[in-house]
Image 1 (tube, rainbow, N blue to C red):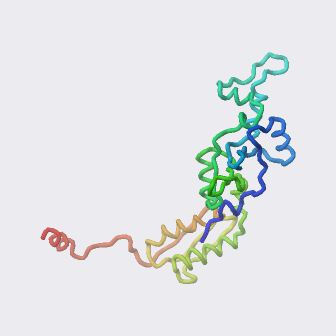
Image 2 (cartoon, helix red, strand yellow):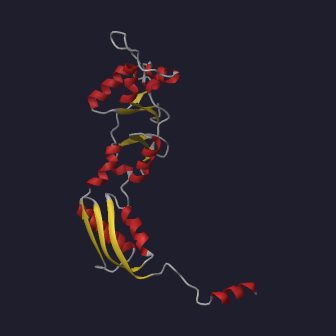
Image 3 (cartoon, rainbow, N blue to C red):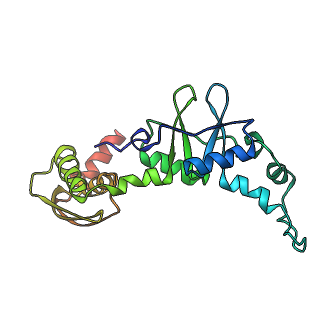
Length: 233
C-alpha cells in the first residue's frame, strides 16, 4: 500500500514572478496562463510568498465608487500598504507555505487545511521551487476507478497486510464508497482493517458489517490472586 505523493499530482512547469514584477505584468501572467495565483521567488528560485487574485483585487476594493458616494473598503495600515503596492514583493502573502514532493496527498491536504491556502509551492531539499500543487490536484485521487480501489483493498489490505484467507471478506466499491461483508479470524483485526482501508486513496466512505471468529480483545488471567501474591513476595 502506498499513498500517491505530491510529486504524482503536482504541476512541474510553474509560472513564477520576482519581487520586482510589476502589478500589470502579474495580471497578464494570470490571463495568459489561465491561473489565479503564482509563487514569488528569489534569485535562488526559493519561494518568498504567493500572489493571488485576492491580493490583486485589494487595489479595486480600496477605491471609492466612480461618483465618490461610497468609500472604498476600510483597510488597516498593512493591508492598505499591500493594496497600494506596485510590485509582487509588496502584494504577496508571505512567507510561502510550502510542501515537499515526497509528501503524501493527505499530508498536503492537511497543510492546506491548517493554513487555509488553496495551493502549495513544492520545494526540494534545499528549498528551491520544483512544482506547485493545488486543491484540484489533490482531488485527483477521487478519480480512481472503483475496480482499482477494490483490488487494492482486497489484495493489499486483506491479502498482503492482514493475511486474511481469500473469500473471507467480500469487498464492493461503488462511486468510491466501500462496503465490506465477511468474517475475520479475530476481533482485534476489525479496527486495524478499518484504519487501513480508509487510508486507500480514492475511498469516499466505508460501510462494514464484519464479524469475527475469536474475541481476543479481553485477556483474562487464569489465577489473578496467585499472580498478585507472587508480586508481593
